[in-house]
Length: 224
Image (cartoon, rainbow, N blue to C red; front, top):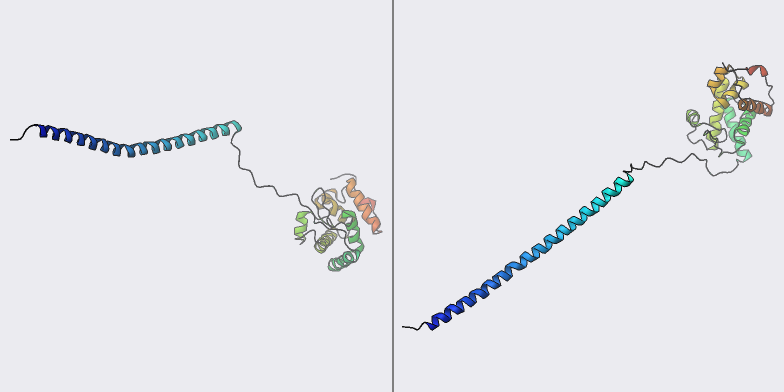
């Protein structure tokens, strides 16, 4: 029969070993928990920071108001090409061709060019008329000038317009030039060249340049 001491020591040793095992197990289980907690805290911190930034952005937008999307930039105002005066021989050749093509006097074409632009192929008026013969955009397209600052296209289109006006008004230069300057609607309303000072001076100047007689009876006193 054995004594009780060994059993006591065994129980004590078993208890100690069990305690060590339990502590080891607790230590192993707490590491992942602590790591997981740290990661969760980081996630919450980042989330809170994002929410704070969003609140600040919302507050700033409320103070300055929502800005509408910026529209596309407007197209710049039309500008003529960077060019100089036309060589006289070149202009003479172009005018001669247009004169023959549309049966319009060479002298009349040259006089209109001098009066309209002073011979500057880059000229642009305040109303948007372009080039040597100062074609309005719609008129340029109608008369076939897709590049209104091109010398040949401009002179050809301007001469074509003169020819159309000559046919419309049966060769009456007062009405033709009045319509070239002020438009056909103004001439038709007036029954002749409209008595605008600008138009009157325009007609007189061109007719003096081509040495054509001026009939003052074609200037009615009022617009009908």
